[in-house]
Image 1 (spheres, one colour):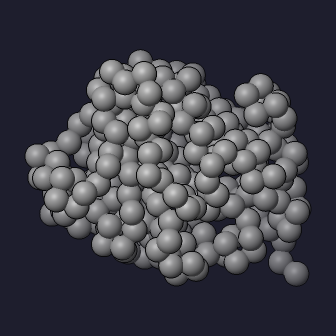
Image 2 (image 1 turned 180 degrees about the vertical axis):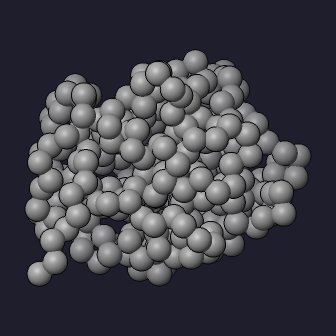
Length: 291
C-alpha cells in the first residue's frame, strides 16, 4: 500500500485517519488569470501555515471543529491548461463526495470553484444553490479573451444550470448587471446590506434546499482583508459574515465549500490568519448545523 505524502496539516494537528474525517481540504494554488494584484498561488500554503497558531476551540460554535476530523490533502497539480486543472479539481472533489466527506477547496483564484461545482452536479444534479460571498459577480461571458477565468466562474456556474446568489457585491460591469436583471438573479449588494437592518432575512429570503458555499475573501471589507488581488472598500465585517454563515448552516445542508483569492502580503500575516479563522469558523458552523 503506497504511503501518503507528508503535508502540513490544517491547524497543525497530527493528520487524522482519512476514513474517520467529516471534511477534507483540497489545496488548489492556482494563479493563471488574475487581473490586478497577484499572489493567489501562495494562498493555500499561507492559510494552512497561519492555522498552526489558531486556538482549536471556537467560541461561536462552542466546540473544537477539528475534533470532527479535517483531513489535509497534498495540493492539486495546477500546471498546464486551465481545463485540465479544473478537471483535476473535479476528480479530487468527486472522490470526497463518493466517500461522504465534505469537500473543501482552498484556492488559489476563484476559477477553482468550477471544478467543485462540476463534481457536485455530476454526483447529484443541479438541485442546489451556489451561495457566493464576493465583491464581484464574476458573471462575465469572457474576460481578457478568456471564457474560463476568475471573472467568469459564476457565469460558467449558470451555464451548468445552477442557481447562484451573491452576497456583498460592490464592483461590477454594466453587462453583468444586465445579466443579473435578465436572469432574475437575487444578489444582495453591499450597499443594500449596510442600509438594511433586516439584511440577513433578505439574504436568505426564498432560499431552499442544499447549498454550496463559495467564499471569496474580497467579500470582506478591505479594511480587514486587504490581502487579495482586487480589494474593494465597503465590504462585510467579520461579524456580518459570521452571522450569515451561522444562519445558512443552521437552515441548509452544505454540500461543499471553497475559500479563494487570498494573496498574502509580505510580513503581514494577520490577513492569512483571518482567512484561516474564516475557514475554521465556516467548518465549525457546518458541522454544528448537520450534527
